[in-house]
Image (cartoon, rainbow, N blue to C red; front, top):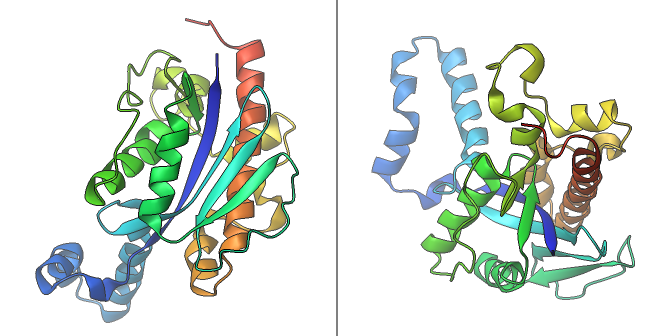
Length: 239
């Protein structure tokens, strides 16, 4: 069975691309904050959160690895078509002219896999890709990745599996942790070890350092592959 492990990176759109009514909708809560400094801070928070919403953000990178062969590909949006050397000879870095081309390439690859593995992909990566693809009129070749939630086929979301589908609520034995925390506990090299986090992605893209974002995204996927193997060997099948 062919298994694809993937992760995405997103950045918020330029706020000026939104019309007046859209901006009013996003920031209307600011009117209820009397303090100017608190209002400014909250505005910055909302602008940062825009990268989490597919209606106000776009995908700039998709990294993926075949869990069986360990071969992979990193798609990223870049006007520089020179691929350059890869930090991993088994992984190809492919620049794409725009988000639509990147999504088309991704869905062309995705349809050849039986299973997909993510970390929090059911709540974020997959719906984000679905909506961005719909907005850009890109054909989605796999429309079954959101469910069934309580099965590892066709989508194994490790955050669901490692929290036993949230049986204990937000606290207790099934509390959710981030990928960095799980990696350190299970002895996996954390993607954060290079000093880059998801919060840095928009800044790096603005600075023209998209290749660094692509390499960071690949590290996320490599860590997810290792975490998936641990789950499969030690925890898979627990009901």
